[in-house]
Length: 202
Image (cartoon, rainbow, N blue to C red; front, side, top):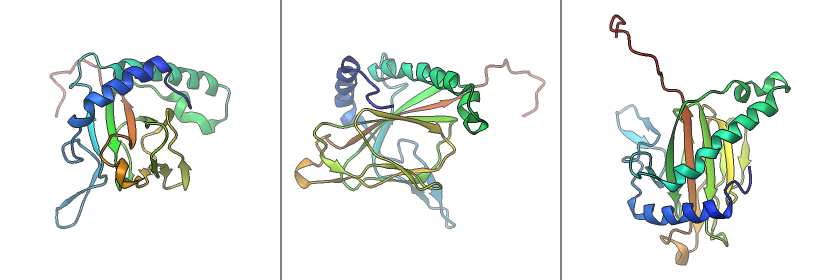
């Protein structure tokens, strides 16, 4: 979906991103994907900074604005009802919980191929116009499909599909100024709402 957020929403979002910029943390602190080598050493698959904002910002404008993702999800389900079985995922997708991750990519930062620990991933890319970097595109590595990083473009896909972000390349004068690649990610999943049975075994 292109032009996902309207002008009023973007004003709120950019204001909040400016506030968050100095609060983003390293991949290790941000709970990012990693691989564990045979020697037990953990290698984080990305180099950019990030922050889960759900419990950090009370009354977050970003979370207020991205609630409409659920409306689009419902629209997709309605559109898929009469389609072939190849669209089974969105026809049957049900979530009752989501978390929001804000990420920022500056020069030479990337995210190696990985899958997300959720049911559905929703990405929205943002940057300051005019665009001051190259790269930062998303590739579904098992299918050799690349989606160009376009400002205010939103992409929704099954989290189990492996994907990566190509390295962002910026001129020296534009580095470390917040004019690189921003990404707002919603991870949709299901939380078990059943009342625990004390007779259930661990």
